[in-house]
Length: 419
Image 1 (cartoon, rainbow, N blue to C red):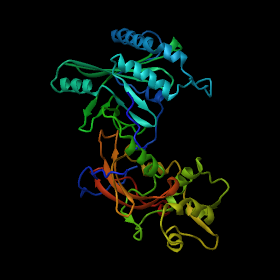
Image 2: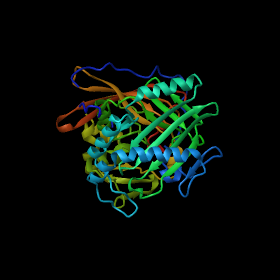
Image 3: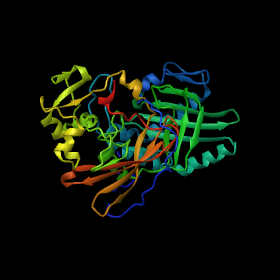
Image 4: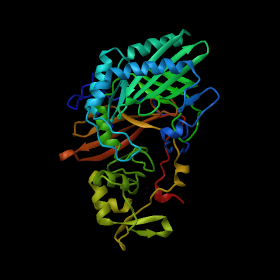
């Protein structure tokens, strides 16, 4: 059942480069990144139309139906769950986790038994294997006919995540249950009225059950009906995720080698440090530059982390990165809690949708930003050119913003220019 792992967080043939549209003429308001919220916190959000139950028997006739369905499904894979190799929990609150191969076996079993399974394959996004049934459900909804659709997923813990979408004259609802093998906990059941939903041409189903515009979590949940292109996601993981979009403008402005524009090398430091060392940068033992709300990063360390990603002479780099010869350092400004008020922006997920190999050996990627705040497959898009090097290394060669909506782009002003 697994989608074949062809060589994409997300090359010999050229894939046509596409973008989501022409660039908008609208002004670019500055928005600010969204904090995340835990599942347990989300479960406390409720409205008069929504019900959630974690203790005792819910006063809802659908509870018995869904619990029976979950028991039926779990009984089919119970033997596989029991025999699966599991990791030891790190704390008393954690569950042992199954390997991906064990989850694959369970997914295959349930898929072959005819259930509507989400195919998981971390770190790639999961997708619904029986999308044809979901399209039939959605067609019925568009015709205002009564309809139901299951979506089933096996979690890393082996727990069953079950959702039942329904539609009738009263509207759309989703009934969900987390069912625990061996009955180690009571099933967790929720009923929600669906406030808004949509199915895009790309096969992304968005639905909203909580109040809109709460900055703690994305407005919409997403179910993908199309298998991810693993090659393209690998390109995103390798080239886009190391730096990202929060308080760094590498992918948000137009620049190229020799025409660096307002590109901030300083704001990339902690991200590339993590890529280099595999751990978060801590500035505790570095000199504080009080007048700049910054730290002095020794030149040797800063250049060792950032310079390999660019084909740039050291003199130009020092000027652009504000090198201080007297102290032999580069300034770097960290992010604090108050900064995120200014930086807030819609929840986004970068997806490489195409690439082309150029005659000079560089590669240009088309990146589109999916947003689960706006049920939008492409909030903005850009093309980034990279130069692959030996041993998996690479350099950033240039970037060009190709499309944006009326919602604009994330905040692009370099941190060292903030007040």
